[in-house]
Amino acid sequence: MLMALGASAQVVTDPDWKETETPLPPAFNKDRLISIEMPKYVSLRFGVDPATLTITPDGIVRYVVVASNATGSINAMYEGIRCATGEFKTYARYTASGQWSSVQNPQWQGLDDNLPSKHAMALARQGVCEGRSTSASSATAIVHALQNSGHAQSR
Image (tube, rainbow, N blue to C red; front, top):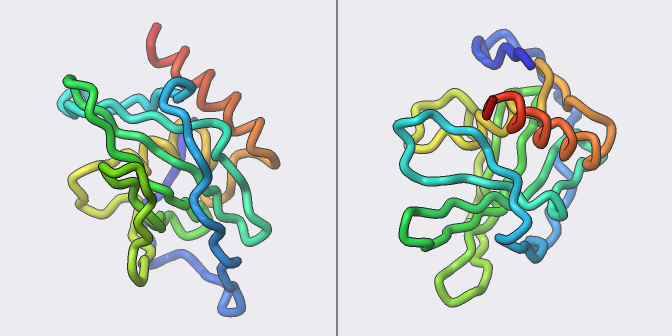
């Protein structure tokens, strides 16, 4: 699945667009994660819990992504991707105490910004977005695309 997410300045945004209210982060299960294929130099493993994937009426795909290291420590984030603008946002982070902590004043960031982790870009490319639109009409279809992307890349 190819996508062009650069040239954000050329994106025509809807001036009337308004993000729907963000619900509380959903519960996640690290045992059912779908792996996100990352570049070999990335030492963390990333996965998304398919049960947390939703597509909102405003076109945002929300999900819980889990990062784990070689020792088994995990970090989780509740995020959203807006394919129309090539952006993502982190709404909450899972704390070591097992609770969600909301991000104060979460901001949209470009998927191609120079961030330490490119997991949101990888997730967008592997099944969430197709160009500037959501790749599927249902969360189930995105799950299938992510599963197929992982199989195609592991061959």
